[in-house]
Image (cartoon, rainbow, N blue to C red):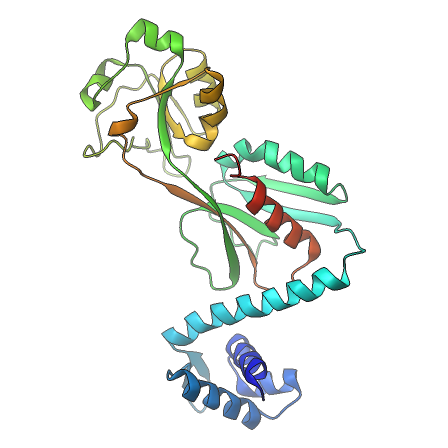
Length: 294
């Protein structure tokens, strides 16, 4: 087997946890699969499988290599699909899970719907950790690290936080210049829906700062609205308030005291040897469009 054939044998054996099953799928003997993987291990200088008389399991190096190999084959198949399906517009239902803060992505999602009218978006907004494959999602958008080896991943973009309020609020209450000044301000706080705990404001050198609470919300949109109405100050992701700051509806303060605490949005989808056109165009569109103004 050539290099690609060896990689394919490795992926099939890793996914089936069996050289015999991999051989049946490839139309070769289990012995041929085993020899191809042995040559691959020799060339790489690492052991990819723990072998026993009954089972084969991946080594830690094998787990890392499997993820890379899946990406290689997905890229190859995507290139083939782009050539073979250029005349067929992607269509059908696309089931996507997004965090609650994903409501702020609606302008980008609406633009996607206009660009690909034959795709029916089925959006599920939740901060619950969904099982992408078991629950039948085509893609998920999440913050934080991705740890499921069954999924492919692409980074959409990163964000930081801004402390914002309306101009009229600061005219009345003054502009805070240091963390202790916040004790006399009306603070609009985000509450995690999963735990009920208030989210800390990431001020440099000040963890778990005891802040007043004027109002709380488990979603971002009400905090943006209350801040715009001059009802207090809020600590919000920059992508949620960027346009309002540019328009002068909100003012960002204490930027030099805010830690560069950043979150990252990732889009994940099931690892498949045949990624569908609707998933491919959605991943590409979101990657290119969501943070292009940042």
